Image (cartoon, rainbow, N blue to C red; front, side, top):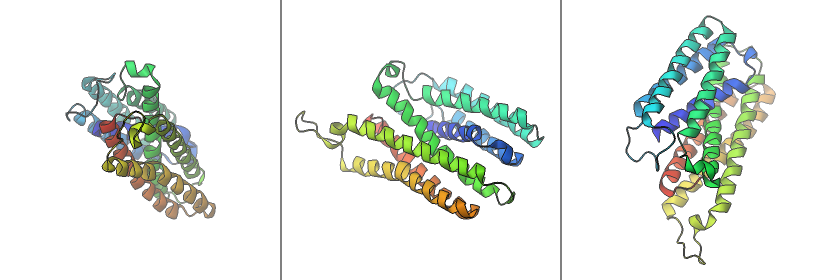
Length: 267
């Protein structure tokens, strides 16, 4: 669970670099961002395969390959941070795109088995993982970008607006996928008298509520508030709201990971 959490953050953060207007953001921001993904890569490598029962079934990537990929992403992050320090923006951007591509593929392959890719269940699972990575990564990236306005107060608010829109898109997609999964597995969650299914426990229902409120509804509400605040160019208030969004996203993400691990449902 820790391994997948770190991979999600790397994936989400690096995708933020790809969609934001990079020319309007100073190089120092991307240098620090790549150092963040360097630390997350180290966490991924150290935690891969270390916790028994972390994965419900063997995935397409073994812990050994996850460690190798973590080392590659860590190396790319370090070299990329050097290029951003030297103001070699074009080279730094190429490293950012490479990290995003590797992290996205790794996230998908590390959450599904070969057989599950042929099923609707398996495809819902990895799509939910990508949407979750988008929510948590965008919330963190937006919050860190908001803090960067303290060092570069004359920067345009367009980058923060773009990241906030991306947060809303990812949270909306995550909510849509959760609704589809709930419609498909409603009986398994709440019980079905016709088939004799008892449904999940009250504890799991509480977790499910936390996942929906924290991982989907909360970030959508934060996105709306940030959009209204940025009309007045109040970047620090927007950053505070995004910080709340980070807490909610992490709460929803970790609760969702517990549910997927115990119930084996693509919520």
